Image (tube, rainbow, N blue to C red):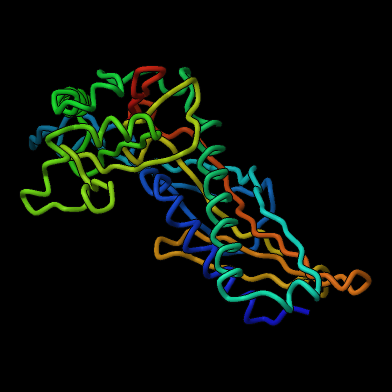
Length: 300
């Protein structure tokens, strides 16, 4: 049988890789629960609804109405995605720490990609988010394209600190070809040259994803209130705990994945399932902009 140290190392490495790939989800509103959950359970996710104009006080009417409010939407945990593998006692005896790390990171990255793909595929539709971005992804090679996006976000009254870009490799490549961004290292910002990872461009937080976006979109422009995501922990029943060991790992933002382990003595094999339980709902439909084909899509 495999030692518990293997399990601890594996889920730690998998969580690190999962978190790195899942970064685009942090551009959305999300909530997590560490309570035992099953597919079909519901978690409530808070988000900011549309803002109205400020009120004008007078002593006759006082403070009337609410300009802003926090909406709460019930999100069903209807997706349970997993990576499964098995190790015989013979294979386990030959494992090195490097092999464990490689396997764990591959599983964590693949799991995260599938979470992102299903999260966006189920919510980003023309019906849910009808507004398109004002530029194509190819226009990101010029700073004029970003100026157009800034103007569109300003006119839509998006707040300044929650503007995000989720870009596919094609759109990300256009961003890196922008000469103003490529030369930014001259002003102390070397992350573009060193890592090809500009963190913020014209007020937009930038995220790269290798997931195919729906409807041929090359990118999304959004703020956190557009898509709501809930995460839960899929734990075995009390009866199942007799046969299945469960470990969880949580990142600094509270997103949790879990790993089930059980041993088959007839086959001298340990089986593993690395999994993520989650669900999605549409939040504020004016908060996301899309780009299909040559375009970017936006939402706020």
